[in-house]
Length: 81
Image (cartoon, rainbow, N blue to C red; front, side, top):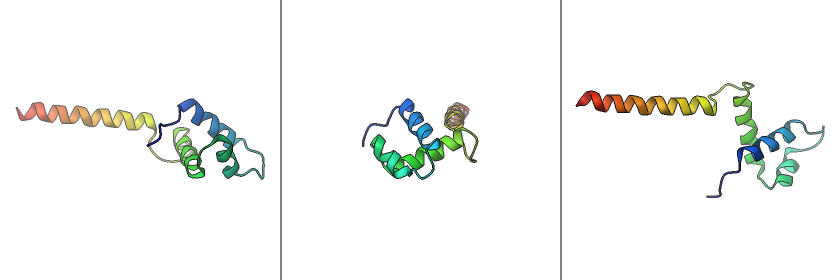
């Protein structure tokens, strides 16, 4: 599996894609940055969630939820003893 792109790179690509000129295709932007068009679409969707433009859970909310679930499992194990 390829190594994930750095967050700064993803943010730059999303910024360029959002501020593209009329008529400029996402396919060309993806090609210019050396990523697939589907990857760019996924990054745009994730950025929309992070910015509150689209419903969903942000990365921070997902991390908080993972930590809460981990804590619940630990407490349940302690409670069994």
